[in-house]
Image 1 (cartoon, rainbow, N blue to C red):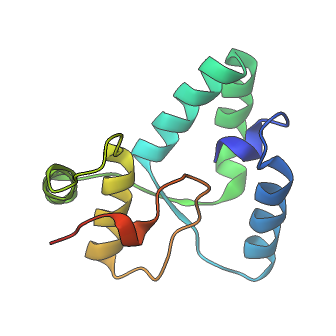
Image 2: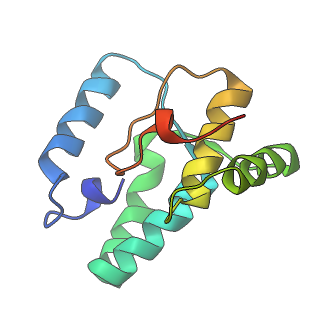
Image 3: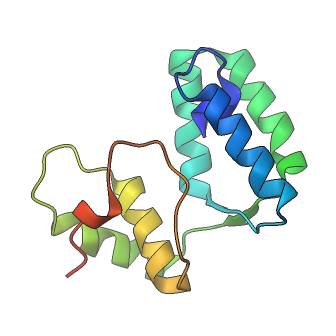
Length: 122
């Protein structure tokens, strides 16, 4: 998501194109509150607070459905995280997989270096 709001990001052009295509196709896009918080933090560190303010201002216009991580999702996220063996696994990535699992979503839009197939769910 950082790529949407940082022109300096390597994924900026592709992120804008993907979002445009998804919105034009009528796709329902979901995002967790954790991803929003992580995005604001990364923007603050990499770009600055003006980018955070722009991000916050533009959020309602994107019409994403914000999913707040509840206790059940957080518990599953922790369960997924502690099963990982690779260094550097992200709690937020595990939370995204927990949301996918619990809601039977079919995929994820991400430029993160993690591959959902590499995350152990069992």
